[in-house]
Length: 352
Image (cartoon, rainbow, N blue to C red; front, side, top):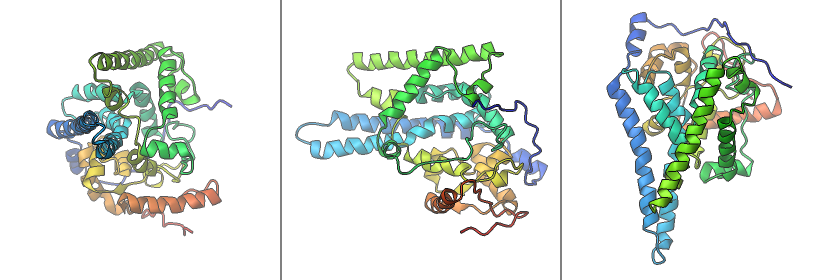
């Protein structure tokens, strides 16, 4: 049955109070911070690709006992970066908060989208709706409620720790379909209606750019005797997605729907600097939803400014996932269960 979404949500969101001058200060963009994050992010992706390529070149019959494990470790390190090269980096750039110089944001948005085979035009349209109507069933098609995940399917673990060819093939088929202008799915059709032919044309052409661009690069890699670059560049964001999964699922899992309070439907956790660097500080997801104009590098300061009005945050992925798995057990026992965070105005319900 086709699902219908409301086009223009009008939701009166609660936002934790903060002094206007302080908020204005936190909303200041910085080219220096933007360049630092972006160049380090892209640079680390290139460095891990280089490590994998160097390991590949050093494999021989005499040293395979150590060189093959070294190659696999390098590919794992490179692939771990992959999920953050896609919609995570693109997300920040689409908010136009990474750089003070405005044209740099869309420039790097498209660059990241090409590297990661990302449908950035879909995400741009979808994410506006997501922010306006977070976890509201009639408006937000970006978050499929209830949020579910599986830890028992073999494809999940293969995708976490290695490469799932079924997922890559599915992405290629979707890219091919969109390159032909074939748009399917209730949310896609809502975002790209037939009444917007120019938007549909741009969407189709972007997927043609992905297919032709990556196809030409793959041919170049083969022709120049460097076919291994197909693994680390063409498909370099398609494997070892474990860290992206661990960081991304907590955002809205088992939280509340149709409530105009981000504290009830969005989760923050804190972590060490390395996952935060990969994740562009999106572990501060609640704060980001409350004040999306605050750049990623100021989200810790925003948290400190309004923390007294927010639920407590778990520190580290271990503590976060320990709580999530407890909540998941209850969700499996009680379909429809929604966890109620301990916000000041809403004392928590007892959790089993």
